[in-house]
Length: 184
Image (cartoon, rainbow, N blue to C red):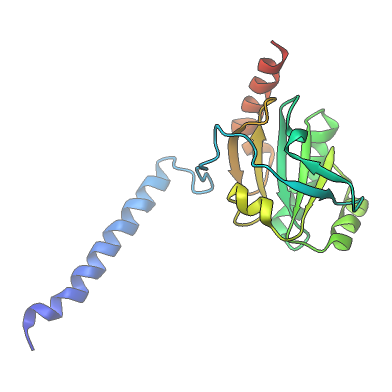
């Protein structure tokens, strides 16, 4: 057997190790692994027609995202992180933050029970049972939160829970800026 052939697996291993090490170093220097760029940043919310979670038959479309800045929170009862963030979303809503919820690939009855038991921070609760709007938004799991301006344009995508730290550092400044812009 040719000795050069024996070094190919070693070379592949070293290249992969160097790649992973580079990514680790980047993450230690401030890159946020939960920040996923979205091709929809700067574009309107995709067109859709979805039912209200609580009132089947009541339909909404993308027009609900126009008029004032708001958050679109993607959540599900099967998502433990969604449970962890829910109390904070209730707190934000009580402070006047406008939030639309999108229940994603879930059981409608469980989701309605969840809101009845844990409180409902949402102005509107969309039911995306088959995940089609989620697919159009590029959602790959829950929770995810989108910051949407008064024109219905997606300005930011946050993957993971909304909590006091990331609200204060990232989401709140952008939300407040959009509220100010909408008043002008």
